[in-house]
Length: 188
Image 1 (cartoon, rainbow, N blue to C red):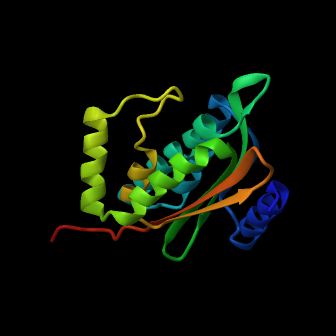
Image 2: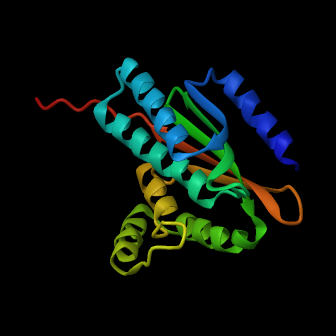
């Protein structure tokens, strides 16, 4: 499947769910900061419970940084990648969708990380997270290999992944994260 078809499907999702915040184009530190600013403001206007708001924001930061860190870099600027992002409200909470091109040579490592996330329960993921923090090395892309683990923990493992080959060198990586609304807890 070509990137444009996958991007089109994401735009259809955006229209169907009346997306809160969307972005398609170049991801830079500046564009990510702007997206986060709009998202935080929109979440605050909806009077979302603080715990849910913090989870959504933390996952947003990680998901958007992953596009910048792991997406196929533009030739003229090593800190710019193209991608797509959608945040929308659901009956259960919020959904975040991201998509970007990745190099096919990176797919086996990504699939290994996805397998780790899918095979472990939350307790095991928390231990893997702590272990990676203690012993993990920072990669040449600036991460410690804990992004997917952290998002899976915060989203209670409600993540889905899709890969669509776009050409012999790249594939489109689509990530969907569902964050369930926390119940307000009031002490009696």
